[in-house]
Image: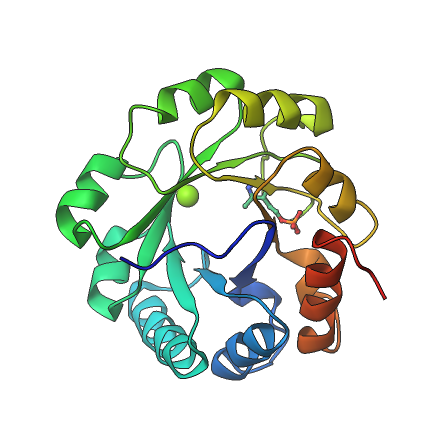
Length: 213
Ligand code: TZP
Ligand code: MG
């Protein structure tokens, strides 16, 4: 069973639309060298054939780097590409279906946006629960309401699974996210806007572990 990284871990989400021409495989490798052990591929704009190709490329790069690769939204693509798992939203296929298709060894994550959804996740066969947006984000179109650090603390207290914070996490607020009890920090724009992905990941890992440079 692939296990999640030790907390507090960085969880980079590689959004294909934000790579700015950087090759996907090189980007996954750089994030891994920077200390990320779990990476998600998110590619909402790609056509299915391109998405499957991207997922295969990301999985191959993750294997070479020795890190886990999850596919956002798409159980079928995760299965086709041999990904380590899938990350599902509230309106995607259900975790129980993902578990049936991918098996007990896969990593299945679920997005939640309210404490009620966090509670409901307790009954789902998921390996971690993501909660957010913790801070305002411009990456997600039509985002849910910002939950903030206090609700993150409450979510942590009532969730028995690893809890991943997401939404607007930067180097400036990552320490507060870890202090609120998040086991992981999922980050898109604050990583992908950096010129040096490896250095950016390394800086996040250091801040999450409480020893910034
Ligand atoms: N789900 C909740 S917020 C979010 C997703 C996918 C976007 C996070 O992106 P960023 O750039 O780290 O705010
Ligand atoms: Mg989704």
